[in-house]
Image (cartoon, rainbow, N blue to C red; front, side):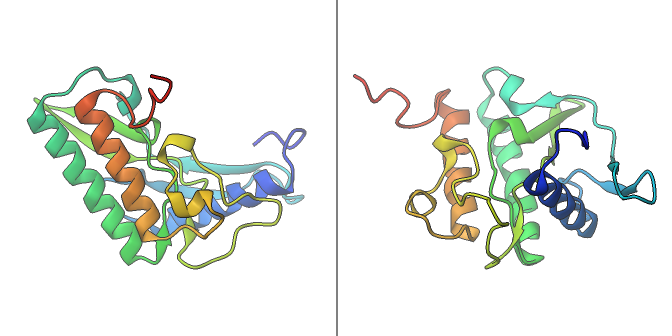
Length: 175
C-alpha cells in the first residue's frame, strides 16, 4: 500500500485482509506467508502471498460443462471452508477466482480478501455495506443488511449463471 495515498479505510481493509488471510489454509484459497511493516514507524505495510501462475476466470472464454462443474465445486469448497472458519467472503466474482492450469483442468484459487469479514461483524468506519460488485450483490445487501453466508451463496449463484450463459442475469434490462 502506498502510504501517501492510503487512508484509514484502506489501511483498515488491508490489515483486516492480512489478518483473515493469514488464518485461512485451504488448497483453493491463495496462501499468505507473511505480513507486517517494513519499518518501525508502521508506515509501509506488506503482505507476502503465494505466487500464482494463470489468469482470473474473468479472462477465460467459454467453458465446457465439465469445467464449469469442476470450477464450481472448488469455489463451493473454498466458501464452505471460509464460512466454517467464521468468515464471510463478500466478493465472489470472476475477477477474484484465479485459475491455474493443471493438466486438462483448472485449479481454483480464491484471491482478494479485502472485503472479507468475520460473520456478524459490523463494517469498518466509513465503509459501505454495499461494498462489492453490483451484479453480484444480494438483495439484502442492497437493502442495507449485513452480509452473511447467504450473501456469498447468492453471489455464487450469479457466478454460476454467468459461467453457463455467458453474462450476468438482469444485464440486458433495457430490452
